[in-house]
Length: 111
Length: 118
Image (cartoon, rainbow over all chains, first blue to last red; front, side):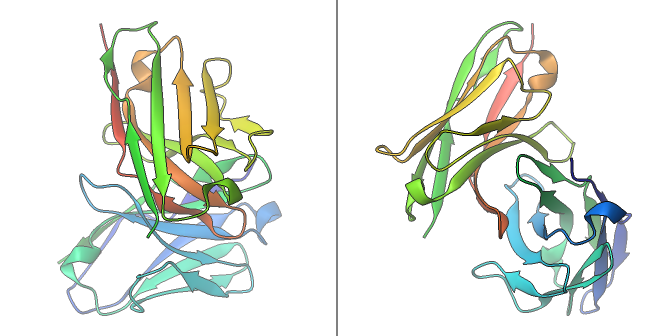
């Protein structure tokens, strides 16, 4: 069964950049992951998928302020020029042939 | 535009059953795996079950095995989750979502609330 571990909650200033990390188990370091964003009281929103190569594909309508990258078992979500609406919880997801797994979530506070 | 609309959430007592529905539009439903994901109050996302495009393969989280049944009607562009013997810890918002093995869970519904309490 796949395993993902998110980075700790963080805060960053309006207009700055922040990088969130999702770590796969070492035996699953080539897995694709997806990032999702959830604002309080709303449904999650798909942001992008990131492959082990570092290639990423944003979801439809997702701002190009969001980018992805990869290093080993780590998958990164970088948000540039932070806006107030970027605050909330960020979840990473991975999957295998049978199941999906979501990481515990990283809370981002925009100051 | 992809749209997923859940319905059927309610407040029930422990041991009771509930059937959630999800109406899909804006894409070719029969070409996509579908999934249910839930979120307990104040908690993270928990994958519940998924179903193959033709309904011939279904997978469940351990918490759902033996009590929940996922199904679909491709003619009606609909996804279902039959939940039996509900427990208080099944209390959550249940999301219908589209899943792809290349993209992950790439579209979400707005969710429907299930509350299990005596």
